[in-house]
Image (cartoon, rainbow, N blue to C red; front, side, top):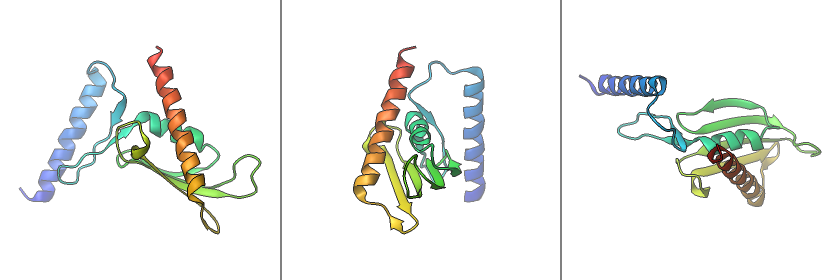
Length: 140
């Protein structure tokens, strides 16, 4: 088999295994929902709390595209309530852990990138919201 066919076969097997285990139930749900991307032996797991918190915190921005397999959410231009400027952003969730190293936010205005402090404040808000969502889930 060629390398491409092997990669396609591996991806198909992973998708089938994931679908079967989620359909029939594989026990308790852990803190992350794994989305597998095949590039050699690399796989990316996306933290579901960071994903949900990113959409919640940046709800004033229209979502242009999402890719749960790579952990990328791309937002279009939108204005926060009461703000004169329009912002756009991209959120990268790069790790299954619920911590700052798993999250990278890139924000810009029509005139260019925003200050690093603004991006850090958005990242902190997403992390705080993700922890609130996780704490709410653990109370069940």
